[in-house]
Image (cartoon, rainbow, N blue to C red):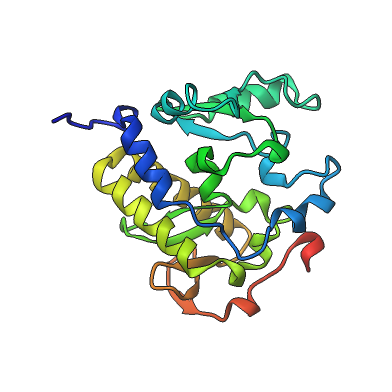
Amino acid sequence: MNILKSVGDLSDQHIRDLYYGFDSPIATLDCGRKCAPHNPSGKPFCCDVCHAVPAAYKSEWNYLEPNTMLWHVWRGDECESATKRDRARVKAEMPKDMILLACLGPSHCQRDFRALSCRQFPFFPYVTSNYRFIGLAYEWEFESKCWVISNLSRVTRKYREEFVRTYDHLFALFQGEFDSYAHHSERMRNHFSAHKRRIPILHRNGKFYLVSPVNERVELISPEKLQKFGPYR
């Protein structure tokens, strides 16, 4: 039996199992049709490499490369507007067990071969300061772009359950993954604290909460009362 020391040790079968268990759409409608009209390229923001460069575990790439033509390793020239500084920043932020990719675009999407980062977007697993994975938080840089962030009530229960189950599994295997998201959650707390805002959480219990970034007190809230952003107000 192979001992898994890091996400880089995941086999093709592990990747297939992860994909199979995290395959539900985020909403009952095609949310890309909601945001695409607000993107000059006409693409959903999450599928536009000029706005979001997908990342995958290197073990995912080992599985994807021989099985689909959807992806190629990100070169940095896919987006004409990207500067040298932009490309350097994206590379510098990439964990050592991950690789940057680019796809053929939404019109050529093969859902079975979406990377985990595509499946989870715009969310990430939120970890409290006392190291509890309590649910889904969103990538705050996309507040004005992503329709889902302004319509969290439309995220399906099945998607939420699959998200939590997937990351419960990965965190049980790899402490490094847990630590990485704990750090990202801390960054979110710092950002929201600086802006005197509370963090919306899609809790693993199926409810919605606002979390104080200072003392992490939680308040139950109706999702319809959550803030909307940009053109989705």
